[in-house]
Image (cartoon, rainbow, N blue to C red; front, side, top):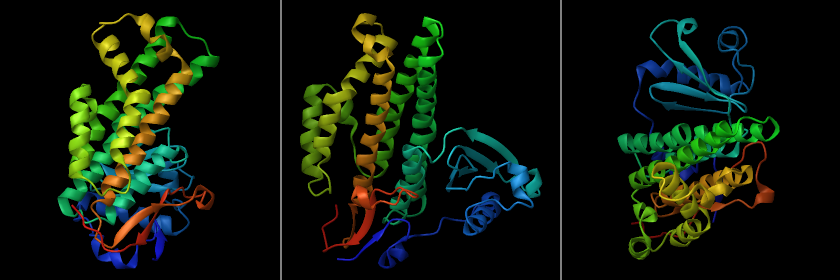
Length: 319
């Protein structure tokens, strides 16, 4: 079977890559960014570099909330075409985290590439892409910013009240990303994982129902969900729900959640769980003779981190 790394679409699947409907407000922006990226990924120095004050290479771009977001290694800028000349476009320094962080590159790059080679088209594709980017922008990026402040607090002491607030804000936002935003995106792909957050009896029933409904996925998702629920999810859920929201337990039971190593571990587990789930769910929407497989770590391009590659497979029955 032939295979092809993500980033160059498989020739046999080109007909699946439907072009999005035209958006007049963004068409000029998309054209400029595409042209500039073809010239080495940098903004041209004469006009746009001085306006956006960006000299780093543009690593990617995505549309969210009627704005074009331009990703670099260290930050994100957003641009809105207001119908005027480019010098008068609204430009915003959106975030100080970029594709140098693996989770940003995954959500803004590889996951969207996987979606674009699926049999998801039109408004449904737009909704899926938007849901994935919402997890990044409204969940993981804010959680990461809280994590950065936690890291800084280790070397720059702050009052105890402020220190504890960092961990509580971090936990709330990360839980929102995992518990609220992730199931919404999964449901758009045809997978209901809401049982993951139910009590044990309903969880076990949900696992059994999921396995029966989706018997041929490329990864054992029930095992992934069970493992994450036991390893870290339940603890974070209790910290957020039982203490932060309802104060039904004493703070002594959650002292470990005010430690930097716990915050680091929770963030890593949460986004990497999503990194396991979404490629599997998206692959289930591929044509019968196309699939993905993991690239061995030693063979991955460090300049463009991609975990999966396409390959042509024997025909499989899709749900």
